[in-house]
Image (cartoon, rainbow, N blue to C red; front, top):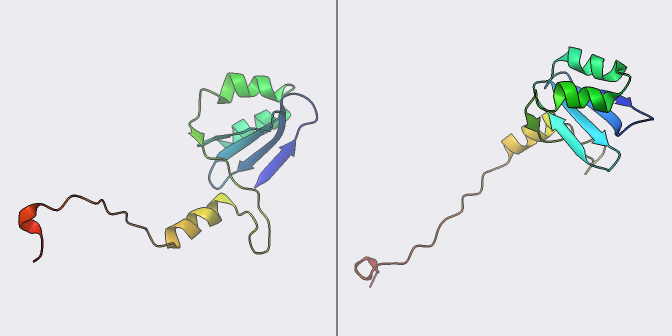
Length: 111
């Protein structure tokens, strides 16, 4: 995973995961926007742009589908994990099936 911190402008930090081709943009108002299917070249151009927010507006905002922001990576129990680890963990958890309660018809009741 690659990241770049910006000291000026509205974008404060950009994180790119080349394995998933996902770009997360952390803004000065504490929000995070995520984009899927972003090529590495777009990431490189964003990092070298004189004004990354303008580049985002012109080349990313309407071009790529939005995604779910990745969690920060860390170590130890309870630490946030990468998108790949979260996806694997969710796939291993059992599914909960919610049953609907339908009224019992008079002829279906047990005596």
